[in-house]
Image (cartoon, rainbow, N blue to C red; front, side, top):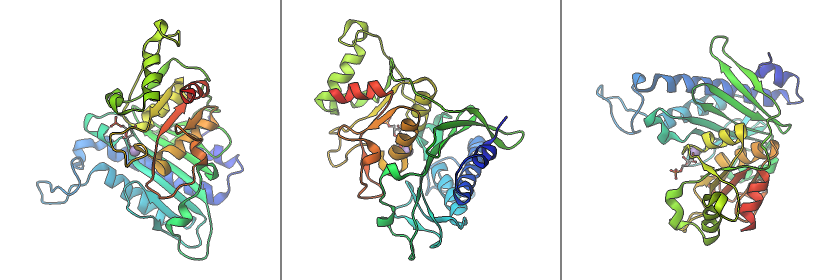
Length: 319
Ligand code: F6P
Ligand code: MN
């Protein structure tokens, strides 16, 4: 049985990147332990509230952010971090070589119902002589040197790419290690399962309306096959399902808030998931372009996302 350190040791991953990955995944194990405590740890509830002892209560997404931030800032190989929970990038070590963007707790509204959540991360190589700035961080997703997520579900799983396929690891709590349980993950080109928040239907473009309407007509419609629908409401859970058994996931542009290009964040959600999907033979696009080709203009930028089975993404784009 191979574990994460065996897989990294036998790869061409540079040592400094191995360290960054180890620090990230070790911290995710700590986050998973904090999540397991749930209400017992007295850490659920809204950030900014006070608990009965008068101590400030923190939401688990704030706690997860602080844990990752602290661990990564202490890692000499880290040049800067950017997090969905931080307004600005946080410069770490000027001599560091890696930028890490992360969503510390994706799908955090699932916490309240004890359902799946996860940490998503995206890593870039970039050096410089001065402390890192936001501009240094605005790199296209295709330049990522590693991307992945840790899913906190019935078991804790790490899904990782360093640009040479996708591996899935399951955390073994007895021996405290991530064991390789699926290597070279592949997403089938065809699918009969889709994921979209149907409650936004009236806000979608006409094209997405016709695409989804054709899916739900099933065998009686132009697609001539029945489709199933699933929505975890945590991108990490929906993408994990697609990597495990195929499917297509959409969070399209809608006109609910025309000032936003979509709901999901390019740097913390779309780019790392796009790299995983492409590495597994799938596709990831906005309605106009490949996600990994987008030149970011701000770290918190939002984008429309259509990802999953290659032929189904193409079919959607053909509308
Ligand atoms: O992080 C944003 C997010 O929670 C994703 O994880 C998820 O896919 C999406 O938002 C859920 O959106 P909605 O609340 O519209 O179902
Ligand atoms: Mn998220």
